Image 1 (cartoon, rainbow, N blue to C red):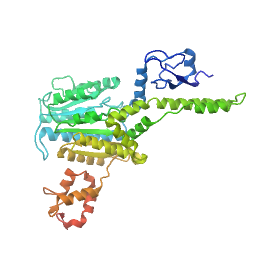
Image 2: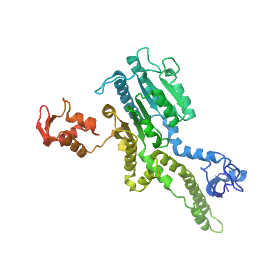
Image 3: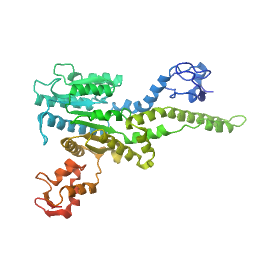
Image 4: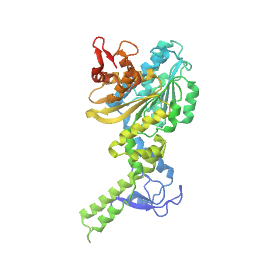
Length: 468
C-alpha cells in the first residue's frame, strides 16, 4: 500500500482520554478527520497505521469540528475585504455618524442630548485587512474621535462622548486588533476598549453596568451564524435606546441545518463494492477504483464528524428546537426566507419595535447575506433608511443592497391613517411620505413607486395632495 493511501477503520473509544484499543489515527492535523463519540468510522492514512498513532483528547476533536465549520472562511476574510464588505462598512459608517450626532448633539425630531453613547462591536476581528483598509472597529474609533472632538472638546473620556467596545475571541486577531486600535486606547481621553473573549451574559451585564442605560448600538457580524445567541437578544435590546445591526447568514443557516440533520450511513459500502469487483490479479484501474472509493468514504466521514456541532450552533442561534423544526418543515426553496422571518420575530419578541431587513448581493445579483436592524425609536428607524439610501447611491455592480418592500400593506396603512382627510405628500406634518418612512418598511428609493400606486387618490399636483 502507498504511504499516503487512505484506509477506513472502525474505532471504539473506551474513555474520553484513554487510547483506542488496537486502532490508530493520524496525529498530523492536516490529515486527521474530525472525531468524537463512540463506535465511529474514521479515515486514516497508512503511514499513521504503521506508526500506531492514537488520539488522546476528545476535546481536541470538538475544537477541530468548530474550526472546520466556522474558521476557514474567516482565515481569508482579513486578507482582502471584498466589495460587499466595503459597502457594508460604508453603510455602518454612515449610520454611526448620524447616530452619534443625533444622540450626543441633540439633533433630529426626537431631540434630547445624552452625555454618552456606546458602540459595541461583538465580532471585531483584526480591525483592518492586510492592505490596511479599516474594518468596523477602526471606522467606529475614527468616528467616535471626530464626534467627541466636536461635541466634547477637551472633555471626552470614560464619562462622556461616544465610546467604542471591540470584542474578539481569536488570539491572533485580538493581537492585531489591539495593535490596530492602539492610538485610540490607553490615554486619559481614550474612548476605545478592546476585550478578549466573546459576547455573553456576563460581558453584557458588565457593559450594561458601564452604560447605565446610555444609548447602546450592538453590531453583530459573525461568520455564518456561529456566535449568534437567541438568549442574549433580550439583553441587547433591554433599554429604550438599544439597537442591534446584525449580519444574518440565511444561506449559512440553511446549510448548517441540513448538516445538522444529515444521517451518516455505512461509508464502507462503496469500498466493499469496489473490492468485490477486483479480478484475481487486481489490474491497475481496479485498484484505482478501490482507492477512489476509500477517498470518497474519507470525505463523507470527515464531513459528518461536525454534524453534532452544526446542530448545537443552530439551537443556540435560534433559541429552541421548535424554531429549528420550523425550518425543517418548510419546503427547501423557502427555507432561507423562513430563517429570516424567524429571526425577525425573535428580535421583535426580544424587545425591538421595528426591524428593517435588507439583502447584500455580489456581482450579478447573487445573494450573499441579510442585514437586520432592530430598534425601538422612530428616529433610528428613519436614520437607518437614510444610511441605506446613501449606500445604494455609492454601490456599483460588484456589490449592492437589495430591498423589495411590498407596497399593498403600506398603502392599506396609509389609507387607514389618513381616512377622511386631505394630506400632502411632503412639506407638512403629518405627511404621507413622513408617515411611510417613519411607520412602515418603505425605503427612500421606493417612494417613487409608492407615489405611482397612490395616483388615484391625487386631488392636486402642486403641491402634491391626496384625499383618502
